[in-house]
Length: 203
Image 1: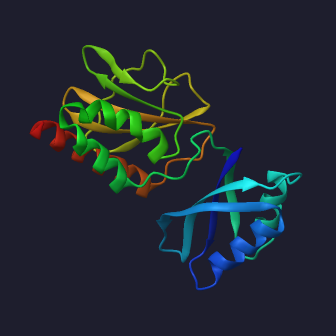
Image 2 (image 1 turned 90 degrees about the horizontal axis):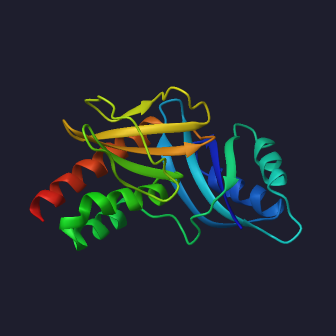
């Protein structure tokens, strides 16, 4: 079973090698690494997709990483969407394959692209008009002008982010238990939603 590890590390030469060595020594086999955010404080946030070797435990990987100076594991979880990380450009390529279905296909792709659990498209009047399997059947329409993190009343477990399609529709993604959507992810969500909207108009 793959695991997804989110780790903060110093943005200096050699950091990635030290991280890889620590994970390997703890019994983890790295399959993919993606830079999530470069920060002004000299750190970088990476997502690491890894498999655990037989008999190895994910807690050992967390401990090994946290023992490195300047490194901090923010989150680790089983990663059901196995098979690799989907990059934004690959998602856009899929959207352009069927422009008339771009908005629905966007919702289908967002959970894997953002390592989230689900996604929905919500209309002001009609409610949820398209959703992934794990998404709630009902979700309230939210008034937003810019892509943003959301606080949803009655849900203290799921982390939400949303972007506006137009004045009457938004796209929302959710992660159960975290990690928090960082600024760069919220910006990427807005960018992808805008591209999908443009592609759909052409279709």
